[in-house]
Amino acid sequence: MPSMDDLLEDYKNILARIDLWFDRSLEAARPGQIACARGCNACCRGLFDITLLDALLLQQGFRTLPRSVREASLEQSRRRLDELRRRWPGFSAPYRLNAMPDEKWTEMPEDDETPCPLLGADGDCLIYLWRPMICRLHGLPNIDFSGEIFSREWCTKNFPDIDPLTLPELRWKFRRTFEEEIRLFRKFTSRLLGASVNELDTFIPTALLIDFAGTDWKNLKI
Image 1: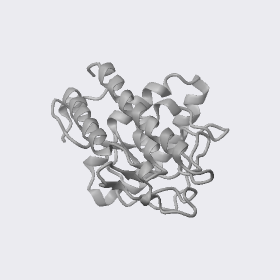
Image 2 (image 1 turned 90 degrees about the horizontal axis):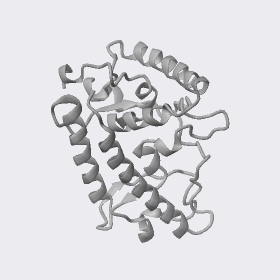
Image 3 (image 1 turned 180 degrees about the vertical axis):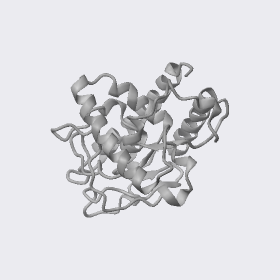
Image 4 (image 1 turned 45 degrees about the horizontal axis):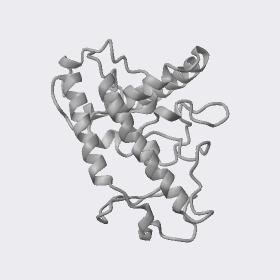
């Protein structure tokens, strides 16, 4: 696999700006309005998709963990993969969700309470500084300065007595940021696959199991 170090640095810069938006939103909110904070893991359950760029960054952070911690997370991921393969027998490495029909993976069970394999024994995220974009955006609605709504969902622990869609202090440059992320992702896929694509996704448990260096990415059917 070609080096992705420069693209990972650019992506970390995008994620750092999202973190600043989230921190400013926390500061602007009235006390008791936002429960989200490091250590809360109420949303770290079930399955949700992340990009392969997120997966590569996740693996970068994962390699910093002690071996015993990594092995425990990998064992959880392997058990999760076994469950997925019973549901989808054709789901195989490198675990691209886009290789399957949308209806197979876009409608995941809402009552799935399986913890993320990257939750530590204390409930904290083991790779917090490397966590995917969706983990950083979750909890608050994503509303652009223009008023365009990219996500109208928010954690039920937040905003118990107000509609956050009406709060101007939560708005941010989401359109510009997401456009920048897509351009970077197309550079990533062009370098990885030899072709630029807008979507290439996996799950967090399977992200830990992808062999980026050992996969013949250029010969994958996209």
